[in-house]
Length: 143
Image 1 (cartoon, one colour):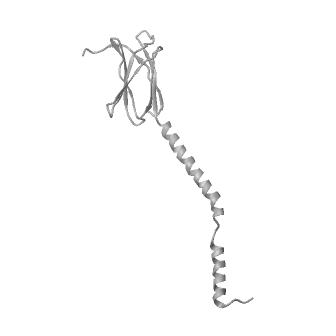
Image 2 (cartoon, one colour):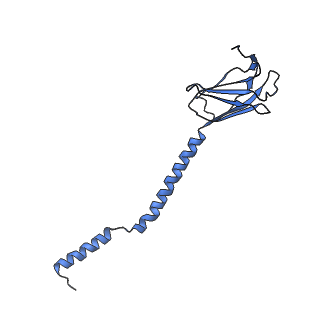
Image 3 (tube, one colour):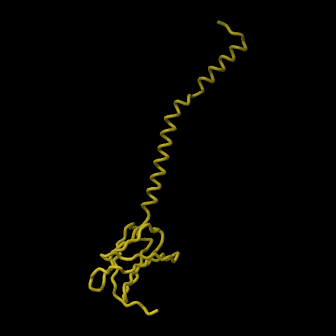
C-alpha cells in the first residue's frame, strides 16, 4: 500500500509521537508512592519536633523528707524571664511539660515561710525528662 508523500510523513510522524509518548497510567503508581513517601517523611518530622520538648518534674519535700502538698513551684525561663507556677499535689509532686529544650530554666519551691534552693536546668542537658526534687530548707527573704 502506498500513501501519497504528504500522508506518509504524517503517518510516520504520528507513530514517532506515539512511541515517545508514555501513558499517564505508568506514572500514576509512581506518583502515589512518591506522595505517600513525602507524607510519611513530614509526619516523622512532626513527631521529632514533639519529642524534642522537655519535661521537668519532681517532688517538693520538707527538711524531714515529708511531702509538701500545696507548695508553689516556680519555673523561670532564664532567657525570656517568663515564669510558670505549679501548685504541688497532695503527694508533693509537680510537673512542667512542653518546655523548650534550647532554653535554660531555674526552678524553686515555696511553702509557708520556707523555700528551696534554686536549681538550674541547663539547655546542655540533653535529657528530655528531668526529675528535679526540691527540698524546703531555708527561710524566705523578707520583702
